[in-house]
Length: 455
Ligand SMILES: Cc1cc2nc3c(=O)[nH]c(=O)nc-3n(C[C@H](O)[C@H](O)[C@H](O)COP(=O)(O)OP(=O)(O)OC[C@H]3O[C@@H](n4cnc5c(N)ncnc54)[C@H](O)[C@@H]3O)c2cc1C
Image (cartoon, rainbow, N blue to C red):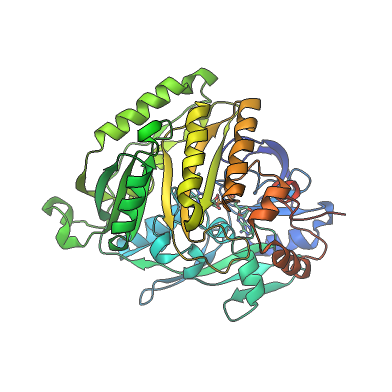
């Protein structure tokens, strides 16, 4: 198979790099590629490139695109168990299965990701406090390792490979197929309570009082608010709606998400377009518009508001942006969040609303991100040295409060910070050394963070 030379990027457009890209049409072709793959010193798998940083980039070797490896293999309508190739997207799963009464058990804030990308990032959603990460619903997957073996990995078979791959950012090998459970739902709608919190303490109190009543819980935070309004937010918490709860006009086709016109950002915006004043205005308007209320909301509006604007990442201009997602454990959540929000607010670096979530129990993934506490995710535009200085301050705050950063979002973390944040890194390295002794699977992120030491 011939490589195509292409500039690839993470979703943040922060670290573009020339890549040699291979796009197998069938798993058989992928095997051949790996067998004859000595032409490339290393490899990394890539789904839809929705990780923000450099985890799906490999400028020093080959990149395997999974977009054509997208076949459904099996579905059990009694249990909701799906088996499919790793390139199947969440968008396709919703399109095919929602009409049959099934939705994703865990979904991120975009449906444009693949099954392989979801498993290797061990993604979490707005239901983490109740359901945990996506790996809770994964029964098994087939992994092509660095030694050329295909291992079926589950909680009872090749267990260490299972827990190293879940959250392992593609470094244990290529996921070929996954088998996982969907969630039964009656409709394409949720009933959602919107509630405003005047500051961070109020938001934390509301989460604490009410979260157990909701499967999904999230808050949008105005990161530019300060003083007594620091951390002011709008909480959005909801549950799937039964057909009987829908207004009569929607009961005819309860599993159909209303069609919306999709808009697209046609080109990279110039740098001045996102100035602090316009972002501040947007955030203030958003807070003012969202009064306390209950609404029936469709899945697209609740889970995927950003997907309505294709290429929205171009709004940050040619220089791109990073997404900074930090998590603090319960004992330091409040002080960590306050320090983080104060530093961001003081920096006057424009950022649209940030996302605040409560996280539940930790899973067993060796490099999985979530554990109990609170997590905050926000975009920061690339302003060169100003951004780098801010990130240094933020990283220090996260470390001082025993927090950690999410690998699927990371583009800037240092080796030292990473090894302090991920206490099971050595365990991960041991499993990787067995599955991939010659380090055939490496990403730009793995090199930067020293997860993999080459040659
Ligand atoms: C708007 C937006 C909202 C988001 N919200 C959330 C959220 O709420 N929660 C959350 O957890 N994440 C969230 N994310 C991050 C996203 O869910 C993850 O980055 C996800 O991994 C992207 O999937 P992908 O298919 O695009 O993978 P890519 O970005 O292409 O790759 C991600 C990683 O998976 C590896 N990989 C991909 N396919 C394979 C394969 N077949 N075999 C081996 N390795 C593979 C890559 O090597 C890389 O390390 C969000 C991203 C965006 C853009």
